[in-house]
Image (cartoon, rainbow, N blue to C red; front, side, top):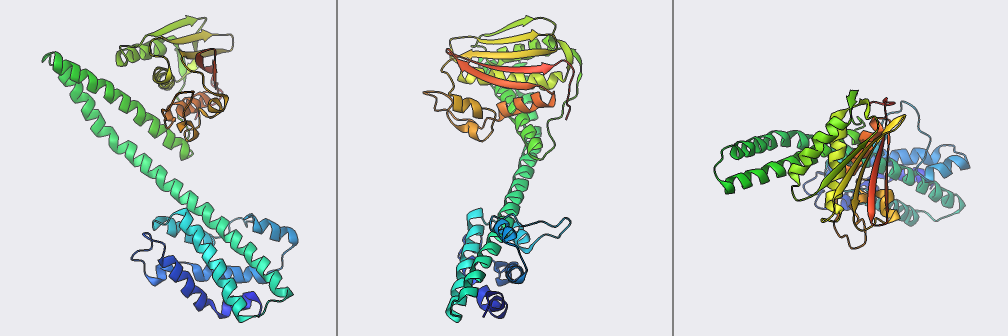
Length: 376
């Protein structure tokens, strides 16, 4: 009996084994009904059977075995894709999803080979079956990943939104306490709360912006004709208040006028200087340079300290990879959202950002054209 015919005639026996295995995928499978455990399995098997009997070239089979079957524009979601979405929503992880297909592959082939002797046509059926299962796995994994990404981004968006109100209350209360003149202890505590609240606000802003980028919305910038020196000086004054024990120097040369979003560039500067303070030598100043050139303005932040390895330099603006230690003796990790946001804000202005580290110094340089080439 050919494999496609066997699948259709013995679909209930195959589904029983699928259900039994799915029920073992705890804790996600706990409490699921038989119907939920079998979710779309019958449709997936029918799709595999149709695939086995369809006429295909060698190239089409090869592409399918790699999960790259030809997609028909406007075609409805496949059973494997729908199955992945429901499994993701049901709390299954991606390893459990893949395990279902491994178990399905093994069950079908074992049941079929127990029922029918293997001949040359059977060998061909096995190859075609494996290709069809591989395509189903690719479709499921792709949709599972997309579903998890969407859920994570929505969670980050809600988290960022819901944290704004209580954080604003904390900052307002801290400012009120600081204005009471109720003694040094209260004033010091209020100042600590204000600084911590500002740090939390900066992290929250980065989180919200990161989420916008992941949702495909990009960083929104609103350009106007400004002297970049003004927002830079303003931001450095705030940073000196937040880090009273650190020295932050500023050097300005040339014409610093252009069309930019001053608030966004303040956010970039805040992230760069905070990064320099965190990773730089504590007994040396952080140096900020603002240099006007003919077609662009260059903003640089430099700190002294251990050099960053070439590999780490290439990953600094990646919010995932940047969690690794940056330099020799540095065991502090970070999500790296700050530098990621710097890169996105710079790109939204049509500019470029680079990092270099040598001779005991690390410099981040942001190059901004005087007239925005891009605006998100």
